[in-house]
Image (tube, rainbow, N blue to C red; front, side, top):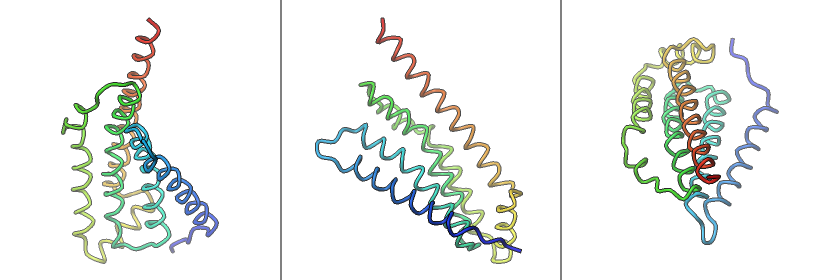
Length: 172
């Protein structure tokens, strides 16, 4: 039996999306804007996309929309390069090397290809996959989630290392 989530939880999620979108638009569409603000707005967009796609997945309960979970993972796999670009901009460095370096985006492309697994599933398979996913038993989505946590951890550590190196050079 499928348990319907609390409606108050839906309202809190929708409010969070609304507030974050206001913050994003205020960062991205400013007069005399700097690239760092645009990248900061893009970093906030990761939260909006994750909340939005989770709301769609949990509250609409549509098996044909399972591919959105893999697309959400693909979007989130671009977090690391954007984070490092943001840190480079606020430190006054050039981050063009990072955007041009294609290997940073390979995990996002692989996660995007995983969405085809869910798109190719029949209606009966999609319903079974959705039950597995909501129970935390879907191997593909669990693997993507684990790799995404590893990805976040590695890039946050690399970003922290960049900030501490910058701090050490500034204090010399």
